[in-house]
Amino acid sequence: MAQAKSKSSIKVKVQKFGTALSGMIMPNIGAIIAWGLTAAFFMYPHGWFPNKDINNLVHPMLRYLLPLLIGYTGGKMVDDERGAVAGAIGTLGVIVGTDQPMFLGAMIMGPLSAWLLKKLDQAFQDKIKSGFEMIYNNFSLGILGMIMAIFAYFIIGPVMEVGSQWASAGVNAIIRVHLLPLANIIIEPAKVLFLNNAIGNGILVPLGIQQAAQVGKSVLFLMESNPGPGLGILLAFTLFGKGKSKSSAPGAAIIEFFGGVHEIYFPYVLMKPSLILAAIGGGVTGTFLFSTLGGGLKAAASPGSILAILLVSAKDAYFGNIVGVLGAAVVSFLIAAVILKNDKSTGDDLAAKQAQMQSMKAQSKGQAMPEAEDAHESVKSYASVKKVIFACDAGMGSSAMGASLLRDKFKKAGIKLPETNTAVRNLKDQDGLLVITQEELADRALQKTPHAMHVSVGNFLSSPKYDTIVASFKALTQVEDKPKEKPVEKKPGSIEGIDFKKIKEVDFIRHDQHLGTATMATILFHDAMKKSNKTTPVKAVRINELNDEDSHLVIVTPAANKNLAVRYSNIQTLVVNDLLKDKKLAEAIKQLN
Image (cartoon, rainbow, N blue to C red; front, top):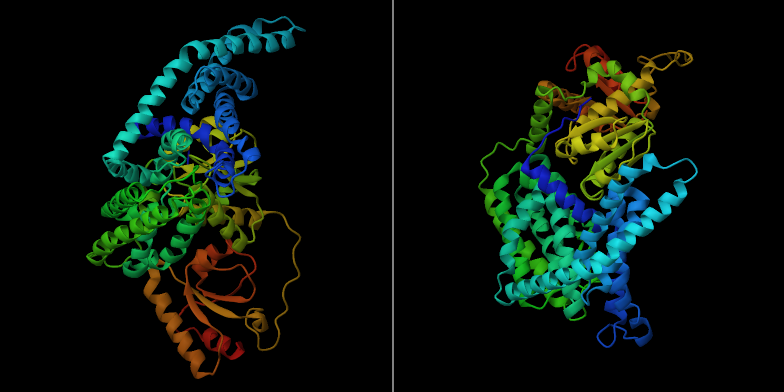
């Protein structure tokens, strides 16, 4: 089990601050999209279906609903429900104090009001006499809320109005001189370092909403959410990649482009850092085309899918948006293709080597989980686990993909355990949890859930620790007290009680230490099957790629069978002393279809 250790770095501090900003936006993305769609379809007279009555909803949603939701969420992050109410009251003061949409003001007043209320409670709540708690709770919140609303009205509102005007003028000036694309030189590397939510939802979305309110659309919504750069890189891997990265790239491209999960292409860039040039080139190209051709969105596209972009595109911006996304994909593809074609690596699985490096790094720090052979020793740790939670920065994207990967492994291993994903900030401490998070977020996850079991990984999309977790849960089922089953009766001509009628595939276990032996055994067995006119497929697979079904016959050595036993319970096995020339192999061929 990996124990999360506290660490402090510039990246962690920036990520934490960005997470605080994006944490106020992310839960309200649905409301922002609702406003954007309402404006796009029904705004009078520029919507797709102009309607004066429905148009009456657009301004109140922008002026009141969205800032209040943001202030409420920001307050809740600091001091739960009391903080949420205080944040909403304080935000109202900044809304009324200016004519500008007060998203940035809400992001200040929400947390600030809640923080002051929390400090007030810490100072006085324990001193309140029994029976007077409700009076204190209601009046302390009411009085402080009133003070913060007045403070926001006279002080914060006017300051934020001037600041918003300056920010808007600055963004417009940058757009006019076509310098906005240069921002992608910073945005693209930051995305790959998993700061995408901090930049997109913490900075660009609030500024984009204000710009869209003024001119009807904003290119800022597209700068981080453009799926073009990632698509180009993944297509280059599809054609010019090597090993597992080449075979997995087509599926990843579909998920990234249509599903909007940009995190799925980050490991491809991390395994070959020079590909960041492709991401930057695509990002700069896309933003240049968006700005030049009049692209822009009515609201945030979340997730950053081409489908989401088309849904919230401004009426006159479809051409610019589509050309910008495709142009970004073409440029990133061309740059990535040049880099990959000149790649002199041997074709080894770079993703596996990266995962192995992360594992060795964790072991050197005493953070690694026990290996599969020692899974029985970890049973006590896993016995109390009732739910698995993946926690990432925003609670979407990478954590959702990690949960999906582990869910698939659980399904194949016959493990029935609920898995879900959430943002680190939303973790709730309780017994029976296994929390899986990235190494840089591990200390925050541990603070949120001190009573949970914790595992930290280097990469949600490729970690060897998933197999160890599965093995540990399988080991738990192996050591539980169960009634002894009636031994399988061996039928005449059968081998070790194997039911050959069910066998639809024969597998040999392939692993790095004996790769040549497993490959040779697979070839020899396949040739022998062919000579005997037998059609059952024969494959060499890794141990974690097996399906836990009795339709699989796995041929293993006694040592490998021990490892197999803690992972799977339904597959049928043929244990042989020699994978190449054991007498049982010929007997098995006679029995197979």
